[in-house]
Length: 80
Image (cartoon, rainbow, N blue to C red; front, side, top):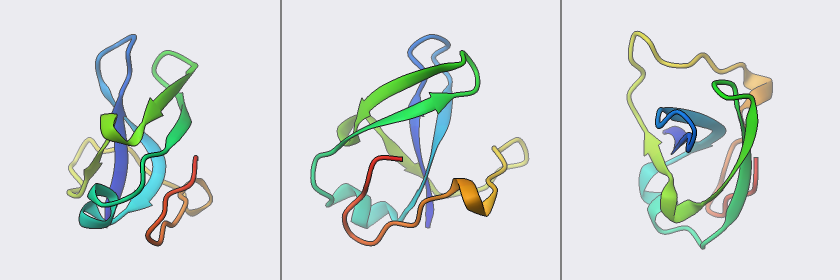
């Protein structure tokens, strides 16, 4: 299980979407569109699933997720 990540078009850095997903289920999911607020540039970014990826490993400098900010997924993914 990991967090779906996208790239901030303003800074070029990866940002978390707040959506929790399994890498294989995400790869096989239907095409969807979502919006994510970026804490780096303070804007909402619109993105498609094809432009996102699942980051499995938690690293020392990783983002911290509060349970209320994370949406569980089960097969189909909803906009976060």
